[in-house]
Image 1 (cartoon, rainbow, N blue to C red):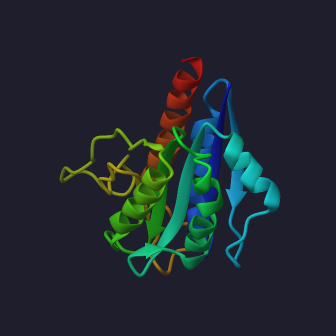
Image 2 (cartoon, rainbow, N blue to C red):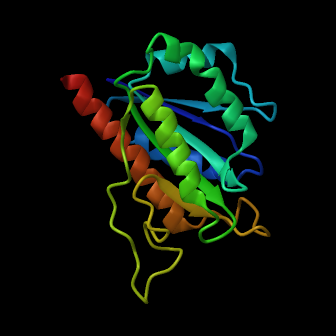
Length: 192
């Protein structure tokens, strides 16, 4: 058995949809238990979420990219994680990340780098997507890793698209594959 925690903020529902795809991928791995921890609009998690994070074998971080970085609500959570940091409570847990923004680039990688830095401060082991990019002339939003995210899953939701319209199928499959990869690796780590 392995325990996967997905902790994320979603401002308009697009990152929630991406988080659900990550969850589906992780939950599809035999022996994986998945906790879904959504940060509220005030930047808070329920107190029991901290216990869930402490018990997890892997933690996936998610936030939309706003102005080149994670939403302030996610940053509030990250700052509050200094309590487990003091005791090295997350040391050697797997970590990964995902983000969404309206633009094709939108400086999404800055958010992934933020998650990576947070994970390294906690002494975690980072897991990237492990996916090749879909970067040929024939490729587009329906293809896996069309955004070429190696450090984490990145998705695009045009500013005028509802969560029913975006992220698109390729981005959601990329997120699902990231969740699956993290859960598979967590299972391997748990076996020792």
